[in-house]
Amino acid sequence: MSSIHYCIIPKNPQAHLFQVTLTISEPNPEGQRLSLPAWIPGSYLIRDFAKHVVQLSAESQGHPLSAQKVDKSTWQCAPSSGPLTIHYQVYAWDGSVRAAHLDTFHGFFNGTSVFLRVEGQGDRACAVTILPPEGEVYRRWRVATALPRAGAEPYGFGDYRAGDYEELIDHPVEMGEFSLATFEACGIPHDIAVTGRHRADMDRLCQDLKILCEYHIRFFGEPAPMDHYVFLVTAVGEGYGGLEHRASSALLCNRSDLPRSGEIEVGEGYRNFLGLCSHEYFHTWNVKRIKPAAFMPYDLKGENYTRLLWVFEGITSYYDELGLTRSGLISQESYLEVLGQTITRVLRGSGRLKQNLAESSFEAWTKFYQQDENAPNAIVSYYTKGALAALALDLTLRRETQGKCSLDKVMGALWESYGKTGVGVSENGVEQLVAEISGLNLSPFFEATLRGTEDLPLKPLLASVGVNYQLRASESGEDKGGKPGKGGTPRTVLGVRLAANGKEAQINHVFDGGAAQRAGLSAGDSLIAVDGIRITASNLEKVIETYPVEATVLIHAFRRDELREFEVTLKAAPLDTCVLTLEQDADPATVAAREAWLGGLA
Image (cartoon, rainbow, N blue to C red; front, side, top):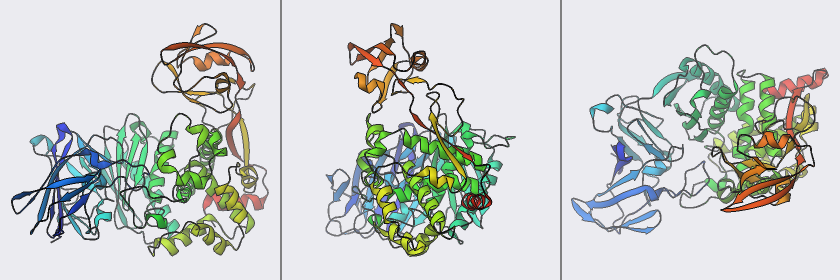
């Protein structure tokens, strides 16, 4: 029997409260300390989950014990001569994939939100009993999790286990009346549990995810590092996100992104969903097992700093959609469309010229995860620019070695050297490994790409594999790039992004060097009129486009509760929208290089 046992029950779904009982058979005789993580691995923000703990109490052999909080996440229990039992509730009303949520329709939790760590015993095995809520209305509830069973029936409430605390918190749990489908990938059982109202074609999901998962498993090499995998999907009206775990992923998606029966093509929404699944599944290797040394072990009480998030999120972002075309789920043209959209997102933020990738990784805790109104002008994403750095590295390796080396081989070597061995990747470990495998001196490349802020030389690199790179002006506020434009005169723009808060034209971001910034308009300003014409969120773009470039207009706006006037000289939309196309007249060697890249042949 484990010396650490947790019992969790959705005690009061109406009040969003889980009840947890923790029993420690061998507590520290001088007084046991308990703590709850301040953050969840994979999401680099201090969230202070302990703030949701309600009514914690302690007892030993039937006698109450003192349990005093000593900091924001830690409790100190009085000494006890026998087993120690802790009772507490957790308020669960966070609808994201990062915390816990409970109502009368379903329950979801990450261990970081509900399971107190027994200080000094983090390496001990843990037993977990998951109980159903009381009441006939919940009789059809079941459980979806990759947490190993220890007596519970498949998808049932009951007893589960974990080898240590780090494993315990790496298996999220979903409970309720979810849709369930199963498939095997390279002999490994996979579950898909979909919570929320939806009309998804579950057979299609299984068919496509099987193809995708088998591609990733074979990319790193069989056998897979897990013996069971679970996709925990929550379908909502509007939402997007995911969080990786060692044998599962928690996903949030628009229900309209899921495939419907009878649909044959992979539309944009379903492509986005498959890309999300691909991203989190690739993490099974890259960050869950190939880890930066700074994460081994995790310090869950505070920030863990590394300059390598471009590797663990950027490279993963590169392979998530590349994996879709390599596995045959989308066409090469569809892949180039989403790659063009990624390039567009990077080019539209001047922060890329101020913050480099190493800094972006290191400052994730305070900048990327706590973005303000100036973020587009101040920071760059280690996801998107990291993906472009991975693309540049891959194409550079292929070009300079005549196709003998690639990022694929680097990832395989990372898996063999670090993932399989459990050794953490040092801050310069990836750069050293690339040099060893390729035989190239890529120090100038890494200096410019990781520690510099100039735009990456993507145009010549893509040309080396027969892909045309073109920049055009955006043609509307909804233009994400990736597709050819209609041509014509570039439209006139104000240089702002509005808040998505309804009818009011309130500025959310003001872009560097744009017309609005030069005139003194600021984030938070509510635009009222342009040359006496009433402005709303829905008509601002159309009104501005009626003016020629360099026209001067008078804008009335409220700043706080004060009406202000601004003379604004309008500008042309910049050339920041990328379109990638296959070069139809490429020579045979270039076509072969392109097929090797998009087909994963090197």
